[in-house]
Image (cartoon, rainbow, N blue to C red):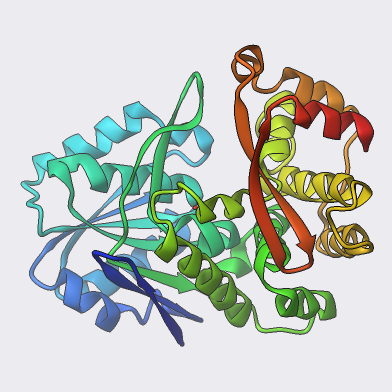
Length: 348
Ligand code: GLY
């Protein structure tokens, strides 16, 4: 088992990464759950696979557990489910020292973490992420959210977990499309911070635990410096602005989040290389890596997608942050006029 620390100014927590961790996590959980009520939140896909193992680990660790299961899918990140979770938790006489566990991918993680941050004004949260995307990104760093009709992730909070346990055996049951989706975020870390990770991914010869640990440690390092996303943390959005335009235009789910981000990363890098901002050859490296992991590097009609994106911001002529790589592993962000997105999409 690997472990690493996230050290924030006011709190610190551990991330554990390994095989078969859920069934063996009683000792990791004990310090948090012993003598406490423990609400395990999961979804209809994940609960049947890992719910019992986690319930047993909670019981073995001395906690009094119960599970709440929401419908799988993005729609679960709703105010309706938030209310459902809060009410069920309050009905069971929870106190602030009790514990909520998020068992699932990013949707369950974001919803549950938001619930943990608001119910009783904050109860202890443990993240047990089960998708590659949530293991390398959303379970670490404390962003929580639900969706509203006006957009995704528009209501939420920053709320750090007490611990993250990543059981890589869960990847064995993850559909290929979801593995590819998570790999886009892994590639993102290589592009923004770690040329050695790029070489590792290119070789294809690695233990997934090591790669996840590397991604979590890059993310932890960034979040430690900018927990509230006012500066350096924006680097984690490499490829995401164009990616969101793709997801929005094509309808969420048509392209996975990772596929859309891959298109975004490659497109902006092709553009920045043509501008002389990025070292020549970087786009080819990025494209080859995305394709190796079954991710697209481009899409037809991107100009229509950016044309439709960010209407309000365009009308007011406001600025957005974009992330650019200078070279593989070296990145920066800058504020630009929102119309640059259209220019990028037209020119590539
Ligand atoms: N997923 C990007 C962040 O946590 O800031």
